[in-house]
Image 1 (cartoon, rainbow, N blue to C red):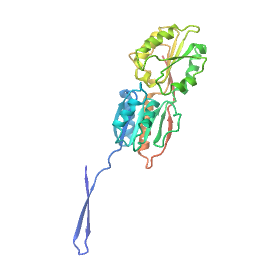
Image 2: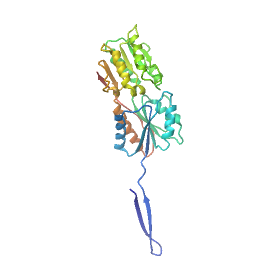
Image 3: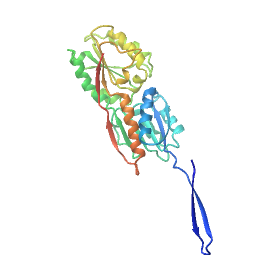
Image 4: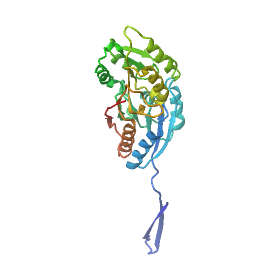
Length: 300
C-alpha cells in the first residue's frame, strides 16, 4: 500500500501552501540462497520459516550447482543469481562458501554459510559468519563409539570423497592406524556398490565398521549410499556410522548395526535462518561469529 503524507503550511502572504510526499514502505532485503546440493523440502522450510519469523525478507533460491568440477559451476550460478542480493546464504559445505569468494562480485556482497569446518584461510570482510557443523572433527567421537563394539582400530575405515573441500583436512585428522577408502568415480552414486564390495574384500584385517564422511554429496545421495551400506552389513555384526541425522530416513532405513552420530540438519537450517535474521537486523553489518550445532546419537 502507498501512503501519501500531506503537509499544509502558510506562505508569507497568508495563502496556504500544500505539499504531498509519496511515502512508500521500505523494500524488503533480498536474500539469495546458493547450495552445492539440493536441500530436502523439510530443510528448505526450516530455513525459510525461521528467517521469516524474525525478519522480513525476499528469499530467492536455493540455486543449486554441483561441485564435481570444483567451484566453477557454483561461481556461474552466483554471478547469475546474486547481483541484486543484499545477503547471500550458502549451504552444501565449505565449497559453496569458497565459491562466493571465487565469484568476486563487485561490489562485494555480504554472505553467511552453513559450514562443515572453520575455513582454513582468514575469511574476507564481507563474510559475516555462520553455522558450524564441525563435521570431521566429530570423527574422534565416532571412532570411540565403534571401538566400544570391541573392534580394533584397524578394523574401522573412513569412507571419504576426494571432491569434498574438507577431504585433505579430514584425512589428516584420521589416524593412520585406521583404514581409509576414497569414493571412486566423480560424484557418482553408482560407485557406492563397487566401493562397498572393495571394503568387503579387504582382509588382514577385515573391516568391521565404516565411518561415512559428512560430505554434502553423500548427504544428497544418501538413499543409494544406505542401500550399499545395508548390503555390506548383511545381517552380520558390522557397523556403519553416519555423520548426521539427515540419514535417518525410510525407504531405505539404515540396517541394524547402523549408528548416527552428528547434528540434526533441520536444527542446523533453522539456526541458519535465525543467523540470517540477526544479520539483516543489524544497523551496521559486522562479523557475528560461528554458532555450533550439537551432535546427537541414534542406534538402529
